[in-house]
Amino acid sequence: MDRKLVEVKGLKKYYPVTAGLLSRHIADVKAVDGVSFHIAEGETLGLVGESGCGKSTLGRTMLRLEEPTSGSICYRGEDITGWDRKELKALRKEMQMIFQDPQSSLDPRMTIGDSIGEALLVHGMKNERERLELVAQLLKQVGLEPEHADRYPHEFSGGQKQRIGIARALAVNPKLIVADEPVSALDVSVQAQILNLMMDLQHSLGLAFLFIAHDLAVIGHVSNRIAVMYLGQIVEMADKAELLCHPLHPYTEALLSAVPVPDPHLERKRIVLQGEVPSPLKPPPGCRFHTRCPRGSKGCSEAEPELAELKPGHFVACHEPG
Ligand code: ADP
Ligand code: MG
Image (cartoon, rainbow, N blue to C red; front, top):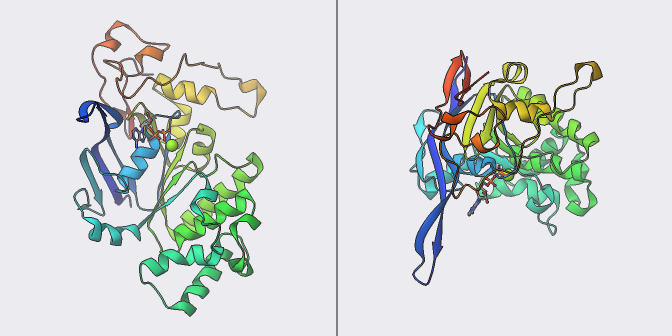
């Protein structure tokens, strides 16, 4: 059953830019600019796009770690967009985040057992003995040893630290995890282990993920569905196999062409995108991608394409899809 766990509609997150003594509002950084999607229970939605496209902002705003500028966020059918601090505290147990750099999210002066148990303390969950037991169980669950609880972060490798970060997120028994580039800082050989761990946990615990990465190869490995983000908006979204085999948006094609293929006979044409992602302070008019699009025709700089369902479950925002 495809039950919606979270549903985001028309979400925007603008950062105001001010100037002068009076802090006059002169512009907005449109980091997230009208995004709609859902994540079903137990599903991994991959979110991919170049650096600066607004992926992290979208993840944080969906969790209400940032105040949305407009739009709505529903969690299990309840509108949480306007929830206050107290209501959000309960929600934090349901939704957790894993970061790119596990080092910076672990306090170097705390044993990892204390770090993992911290969230339980904050939420007043369980007594000390129960906490110790749970920490030992969580360490095993992420492939570490219960004895590791008394050690400090510097005694662990990057991959192990990310396992600790995952154990920490799991401590409060969440339903949804936003994983923001969780393997981007790790050696390739370690990446696969962490991705496999996350997929095992998804299956055994029925977790849902918003899995953020700039690398389509990583996203393709773990996702059920994939959303492609460009300059604050979703430009294409479909089931993984559909998106990888039949991309309709030229931006998706370009991202795909950069993924190495194992079979040399299957060589893809490399599409090199010109320039960088334009500034979200002043996105290009019409289709935001038209300044870098290899297909672009004249009309593309005028009308903004809508995200339309061209095939069942396959959405694309492009004037010349396919
Ligand atoms: P990504 O995660 O895809 O790399 P981000 O969400 O980090 O993208 O950033 C999207 C855009 O929003 C960038 O242009 C970034 O500079 C801007 N941005 C992010 N956070 C802030 C902030 N707190 N204040 C102003 N601009 C921000
Ligand atoms: Mg980011």
